[in-house]
Length: 252
Image (cartoon, rainbow, N blue to C red):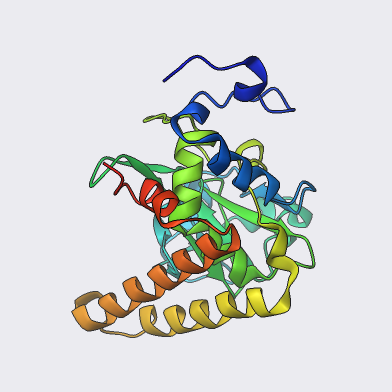
């Protein structure tokens, strides 16, 4: 990595982009000028509660931990007990449909080093622990867009290089990091978000089927839909084939 000027490495908020010089200035500028500068998303961490609130026996309220979700779906749940020990006003904030993500961000080595954000749509409104992060969205942002965007290759690549600076341990999806995720300027066009809404609906229908885990054809369908998400996101930034190859680790 070559030597760069201070203004090429540090953003206005003094966050260092130590891998900024690994890509061309034109590529970097395209992402920066193509993003919205206002804050549209805020993270809200789940409840800081321990095992004395967990029950395997059904109660009046489901409870989620990070391990209970996968990409695109809630896999399992436990149940809340000792609710009388909680400040219920804090709990009520989670009793609504919301996008949720595992707080811990996975680092993956193959086929190239990258991170993986695991997010899904909690349409039921389930109480969650602080191993999960939920999101407060600007009213102009549809939940399906945010879900698809979080699970996209672009956000994984951008986050790995320019938010977490290629860290391999201790990555958390806290609000400080969430608000560094760029959001493309043209996302307010209804037709753009409609594409994501349709794809997410199709994915959710597939992954919710009873035989999804064992059905290779359905898993392949989901991968194809994920590719559609990636291509749509690349289009929002008007990325070239060479720039896409960098994101997908095919530029070597």
